Length: 110
Image (tube, rainbow, N blue to C red):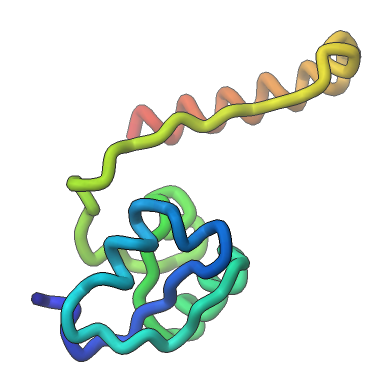
């Protein structure tokens, strides 16, 4: 009910099937200001104050957006870091993969 009358930025295409996309688009009284299949474009529009979007807490914090409320009814999903087994044997790739994994672990602790 708190979102009624507000502009929202929602995902389209394959991203429209995300639980948070369906939840936000279904809020009564919202005005859809943008439908887009690009999450970076949706976040950029939110940063420019074109509407409200549903994104991760980490992405919002990194872009200076303010969290209105958590979507506790949407279950957390795992994040997968995928690489071909052949390249994981390379030291440089392993270092980068380990740093990315460490960054996500640090975010999860917040």
